[in-house]
Image 1 (spheres, one colour):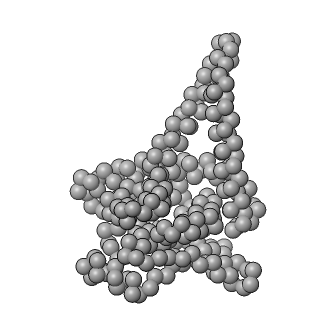
Image 2 (cartoon, one colour):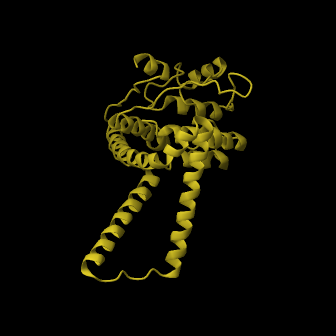
Image 3 (cartoon, helix red, strand yellow):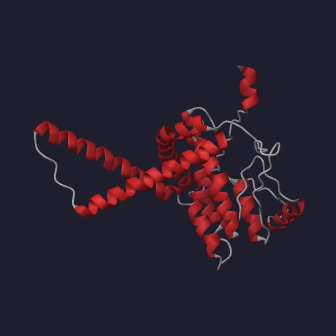
Length: 260
């Protein structure tokens, strides 16, 4: 399942670049990241001798924020294999089964949006840029609520339309204010999907750009299911439950080609 092509492509071509330009902390993304040994030593001092925290569900993300908290900075490096060629990067597939994708997304959501609030806080007190970016990182649970409400409203609208057709009655008119809101929302949705396709295409080609549109619905479904799982796990953690780590099953393009 490669629906995350759009998310990672847009993140590395827009979101992280904007974050870097603002001077906010850059979260690491596990593979393809480097961190100076001196910074690992500083983090280890803060953590009682351990640079890596076994109690963290998203340790790479927290490491990037820890460097910024200690006064360091990160940089998103775009290095080509050749001049004008593909970027040097670690390439792998996202989990291909629905359950595995939901568990992976739930771990990210629990570690960043929920437990991360408790673990890493909001950064420097007066740094609005850092506060904004961390709030943006943690918007997923709220976004899922809005997403669920939108899908419920869409299903209710379809059911109401069907009932009116079956009963031979007319649907009530939509007032001008609501029409304006719906028009603006539709325009913003089209813009959002266009940006997703654009950044996906720049990284993965036009076929993946075209597929990013129907995959938006798959991504929404995974987010809805992952949010439910993430909230239940976070509540269990607050009640003293054991940390549950769903390790990512890595699948690299070369391995898949060899198996084929």
